[in-house]
Length: 309
Ligand code: TXA
Ligand code: MG
Image (cartoon, rainbow, N blue to C red; front, side, top):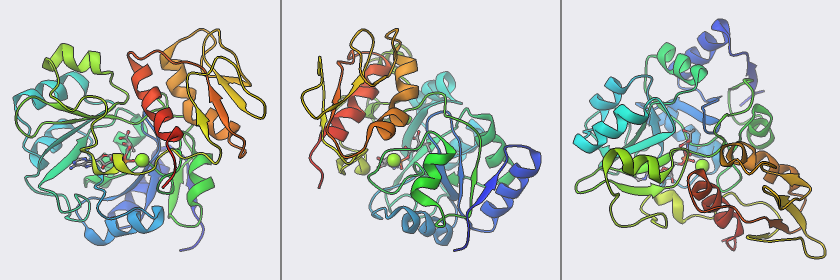
């Protein structure tokens, strides 16, 4: 593949990106959570390029992005509670796993009978998918196992020359990936903490089923993830000799996720600050509260802290 084209998020850029997607190419685009690496979801050959560019194992399924909830309802069989969650949180940082009806390639689903569906809220993502006129499979736009990108520069750092184009469209406002909820019979189950806090889901759909925050039903959740080069130590009050320090609230550091202790601000800053501090030295991280968006932040940090396989 040749050079990676930089697209502006204006009408001409959207049309150019949509044309690349329609013809089976790879386009990285902003969503409210992180940048996604898109290919048309109805075409095995286009989807295969995503796995190749990321070095992603093909047993790990991709989320299918659509521009309107109606499209999700035609691709997946969404039950009553999935419908409630869709009505409350789409467009937005929620992925629903539901039985697959039709429309998404086998490879994108890793041959599962289910499909992950999401209607992103970011205006560039929605305009691009709508203009493409096809559902768009998109994992986070990083080499497999590395920190997710929240800016176009992060995408280029990992994938330049391996993808056709990337939108230069500023930072992602939420900053952590979508929450994944499985609605495949029985009470909905939380597969991944993310941009919609568990508390908000439960207000709409009632208590989530067993499995809880530590569930590993999403095949990708068992893999080494968000791996910085240095080791990560959580719940640190101060750095030890040789450590860099990522602060939160009153517990300061070289960078502070949110000096005022705001979890939304902390989520938005998380991946960029992890990248900025990742120079191979170990990283100490201040305590993050285990509620709201803090759950997703702690989940990502815990994965970053896990030994790398
Ligand atoms: O916010 C996000 O979700 C971003 C943006 C680009 O939308 N995407 C993202 O994709 O984080 P990815 O591929 O990095 O993570 C998707 C997770 C993986 O852990 C995968 O195993 C799980 O979703 N997943 C996808 N389809 C699934 C399915 N049918 N059943 C269970 N898990 C599924
Ligand atoms: Mg990812």
